[in-house]
Length: 63
Image (cartoon, rainbow, N blue to C red; front, side):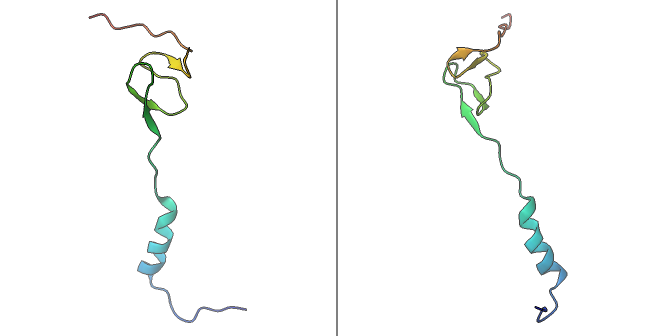
């Protein structure tokens, strides 16, 4: 049975474990239709289009 050769300090132990909790940024891309930034593989909130088809109807703001 394998046994540790020496004590592992708390700093070394915790720094090794810290890599498992890294956060990643969400995938953001420009909408092909209106040019606004949107999450990948989701309907654009500005124009309501996904993959070239209108999925939701979006009312334009009154100017």
